[in-house]
Length: 57
Image (cartoon, rainbow, N blue to C red):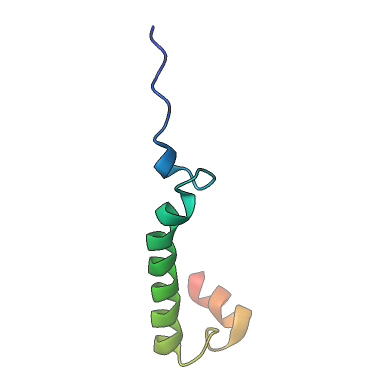
């Protein structure tokens, strides 16, 4: 059995290319949060945690 090759250092957040590898993902997350905020009319779902829990059950 051979040893697998080391992972691509660009894929590791802690590597020298980490910030560059994470930047596109961060942009995606921030965009999704902003879209949700606009759709809800604010940063939190209407009704608070109880209303959210009721919708998920």
